[in-house]
Length: 307
Ligand SMILES: Nc1ncnc2c1ncn2[C@@H]1O[C@H](COP(=O)(O)OP(=O)(O)OP(=O)(O)O)[C@@H](O)[C@H]1O
Image 1 (spheres, rainbow, N blue to C red):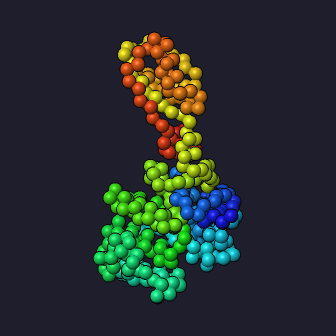
Image 2: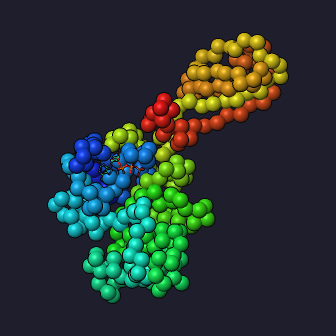
Image 3: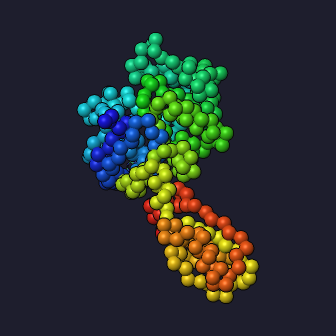
């Protein structure tokens, strides 16, 4: 069996002030996956990524990247990963080309194997290769960060909130490029607050809450976990009493001719609910149903609804 791209075993981090940011994280990220790491603000995602990037020291547990333990083989582990950080920090007086050359130098990539210009072309910054980075727009800086994470050709790329504050057009372009990388065999890990993005892009998703993993599943399984489904019914006449229906967890009438029904899709089907309404003498004019989405699951698991 091949080792996973990333394997965390009981990973812990308690910051100097006593804040326990990671409370025993065990997680495997398969090679070749497009993996979403989700969690509310302060859940511990950045701490986790920074440990893998070698920027934060763990206080317990184990972390391996591409089979290399970060304590025993720090150089190999570091060479196997490229991190695109959240903050747009650059040395303003270097050009994008120089920025990539410098980064390649830091990773010990020999001159003949550097591909700074090729990378700039890939992220569509070739025409800005020789201007000061301080003259780049936020979106351009974001793209330069991606190129910078790729100079040493790592098999794993981690993107920390790559589309925060990025406009829709650029977001589409970034995802297009990330998809290309993934299709070329790179393992992608991304953290995002945009649940619909994770839903669209990722094949596997882990949810972190208060420094712990609360879910780690394929996207399909995670979505199936949201058992409740909703059916909205419009009636021909005003309702007098709400009927009792088996398998229905909630039934409400937002107005006298409409019913908002939440039901457990494993216990009952929409057809049976409608038949029950007809049997109760209610004449149904219109029906719509809605599947749970990742946001429902996320809120359910992180307790967002009850807060
Ligand atoms: N250097 C630090 N010293 C002390 N506490 C810290 C430090 N960095 C982060 N924390 C705390 O650790 C917890 C986890 O933070 P972290 O940044 O990892 O969360 P996150 O999931 O990345 O959140 P966000 O999505 O807001 O970036 C938070 O309570 C945070 O305040």
